[in-house]
Length: 178
Image (tube, rainbow, N blue to C red; front, side, top):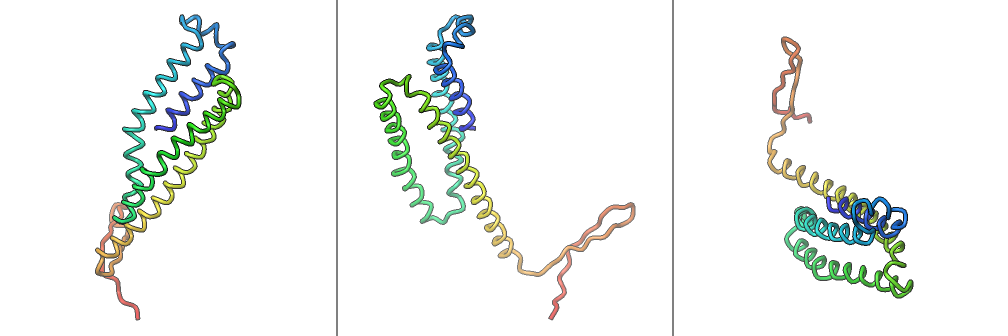
């Protein structure tokens, strides 16, 4: 999943930056410095996050529009693509710029960026779970309404235990009780 990739590589990256002194001996055994390892992990994060975004996140995002009617679908996609996506990217850049200006350097602001990153990931997971519940409920309602439209006769299923202990069942018309 996209969130797990960001979470795992984010932990690795911030650990390499924040605990570079403690990790220097073990990373030196690999023939690297903590800065070089952080650059490699950051590059890997970029590659993994972009590939995960295009292969997992974007198709899932489009699935959220499935239960919507045509007009709501078009308006929702336009709002997300035109307003929300650029606003999210600008907001992230704004947070980073304020932290860099406030703390004087990227390395000094890194612990605070980590707090923002993990806070946003937590909100993202919470909103994904909420969207899943809403999507499931709407899908269930759609299935129920389709079943009601297709079902023109009242039927019930009768079952009984037959010979050999096997359950036997049949669909029979319901008796009208008036």
